[in-house]
Length: 138
Image (cartoon, rainbow, N blue to C red; front, side):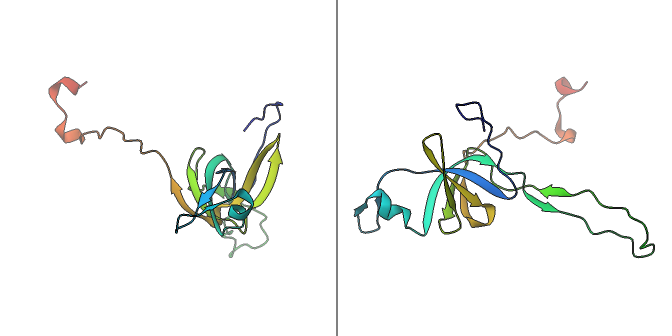
């Protein structure tokens, strides 16, 4: 994510950068809570603005037969379910609030996300090869 000043934000590890919902929140009984009270809630929601590369894992080595070999496996990242633009409902307690160019954001571990909501992108279903029409043969 590139800020207005030209600086680039890169989220590390299995964390996401979330733009939290602003304003008053309504309780179950219909009361509107001011912003400071709403920030103390245990669950919050917002839009994911940036996603880290995922959890870093290293494959175990299979050098049981020749332990003197120094074949070090390449580390890789396990991809996260969250993507930029998703609307996330998450636990507030593990989130860390940061302020970037006058805007409040939350850095949230992926494990604290409870629900992800995204626009349904329906792709047309392709028929199996055995049902192709002569016009589509090439």
